[in-house]
Length: 244
Ligand code: SF4
Image (cartoon, rainbow, N blue to C red; front, side, top):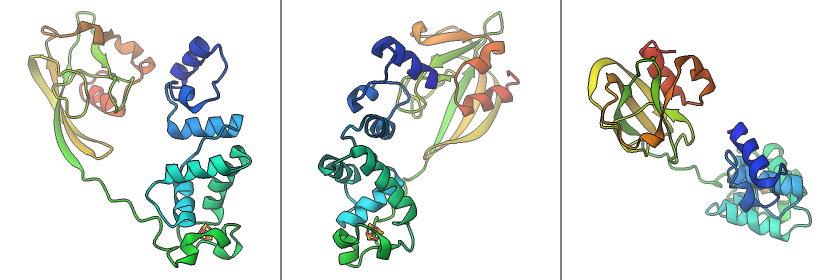
């Protein structure tokens, strides 16, 4: 991601980091938090930053934990220096407005703090509801050509984007079309967790015939595997298949 981001900055922005959140968000590897941090701290732009500390401070300050980004945005638009405000909110959350036993007596926000005024400091922010975990079974295909190269596919979905994956037989985790492959030999299974998904991967050798959409796929030389960005479940699968 760092390399892809650097290439984007060179190619699209003439080697200079853009200053707006909208443009920063178009650079690979930069999400909402990082874009806000760069725009406000480096360029003093009116962009909010919301991490766990800021979420807690604004929830208590406003007595409401529904919309931390909206609350942080209202503060950053009202302040004199977004750079100073964002760093102050993060620091206040880290040192004063701590999750347990916050130091309200020495807090500079004490007189405006709704949580203090309404006796709800310990209730805010409310704990997040845990997302239910999902159990998935996914087939992975180890397909090699005559030179021993491994067929891989670059993902463009919301999870593990821009990384190289082994062809798979299922869309429950990855968004690419399932590969219409004929499994040959079962190599084994392993378990792996991705966010709230608990997955049992089953790894097969398979035939290359029947590949759809060839443009998505690339043959990767095993000796170059360490140069190719791939997620940790792919490493486990390749180890299982004794390819790495
Ligand atoms: S007064 Fe207490 S609860 Fe309110 S922001 Fe300050 S430390 Fe947090």
